[in-house]
Image (cartoon, rainbow, N blue to C red; front, side, top):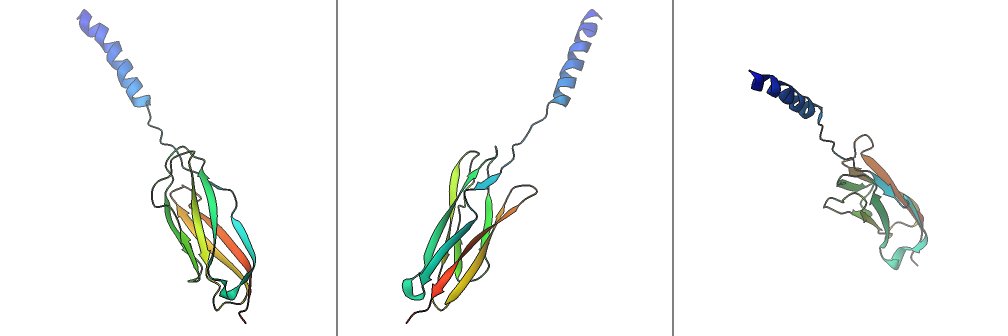
Length: 133
């Protein structure tokens, strides 16, 4: 009987601690050094131009870039396919092909992530293509 009386508070304490214990998962976050890039004036026949957007996972859980899609076929994003750990840096490279597109341009790349709430970020490139002679 004495053993039961001594074990009961111990069992209650263990049950209480086990119930109150929560596993807290971290949250990824993304911070870009810049979200807009101006190529300035580029020649139509000069070939594709690229810019690299650097970012940091400022959260404490792995960041996933689920997709990066451009607003047109003249723009091609390349993004990391593997998770980026908290505190680590990576990059998204955006390439624009000016051939057959003289004049001003402004293109968007939508980056979709695993971040809760704000799941997407928009990157923007712009410039002016001088016509080929």
